Length: 250
Image (cartoon, rainbow, N blue to C red; front, side, top):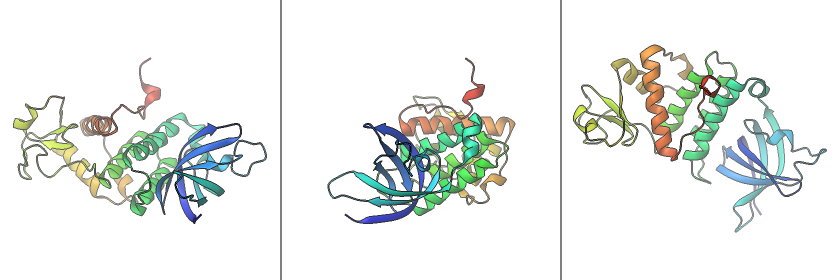
């Protein structure tokens, strides 16, 4: 029964049995894993608060042959992100990043760069003055580190070269499409201005530590938000709760 010691971001947690929890983590050493925390719901358990969603912790995991669930033997809190629980807007933005990672990553496939991007995204969000924009930037980065990187260099339908006049973003094709291919798309494409395309390309290229220097408003922001929201919906197979759900009409 091998022991794995690793840093982790808690993505989800649910009750199991009378006193246990099943927790989904994205870990630095093992990628996305699920573990059972025995007795975590008991009042005197050391594991309880440490395994709340949207926290960073250090884990000791035991892997049992033939069992997809790890056993969580120890969890030490690194960052509880109390601010997320005190501000629903921050909570919604953090949950969106966690939901994207949960949806687009396979189990047991470690990617230290993706872990560091998610970790940096949560730290950046905790001090952000614009949580929705921060969540948008890190969604783009997270997509860019996986097989779902948006195509921004050529038409994702016909392969036409780098200069695409009147480019549009096709969520179904996973990137830019030229005007001719856009007319053949079965679903709505999002027209992208030059500013929106430049913003998207920079968000894919910038390192997590500096990505929050990017700013967007007006047309650029609305176009990129619509394009990424549509693409995430296609990739995940369903519409995730919106980051700005508090401002949505009832």
